[in-house]
Length: 125
Image 1 (cartoon, rainbow, N blue to C red):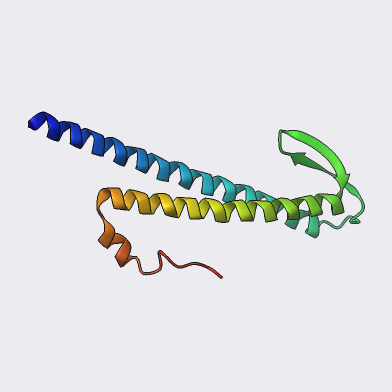
Image 2 (cartoon, one colour):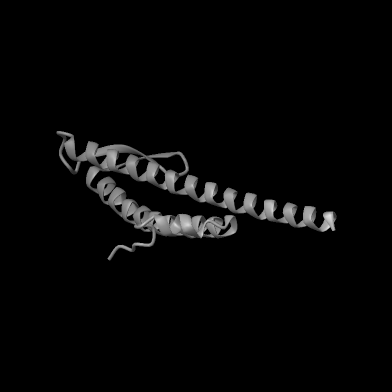
């Protein structure tokens, strides 16, 4: 009888640890996307603030560690499109994080905790 309780407790602990690791992974993913968005904003702001002509060329570090020389207008357009893509990915990642938090809370049996968080289930328009 005690062996069954120990096995059940071990399985439950393993499920909780797995769910907690999934929440942690999703959280890091959201932070990484936010960091990339911030770097793109900084780059776009630097291009807009520069005194040089918009058609003059500048160097940019592309994904994969490759430096390219391109016109500032093209770089700005690239950064804007990347920011739009990252914003969409960030929204999906935040929804995934929220779902993982709900799953973890249900595994922990903390339904009342989610009930106390009044704005947790709000959705943007």
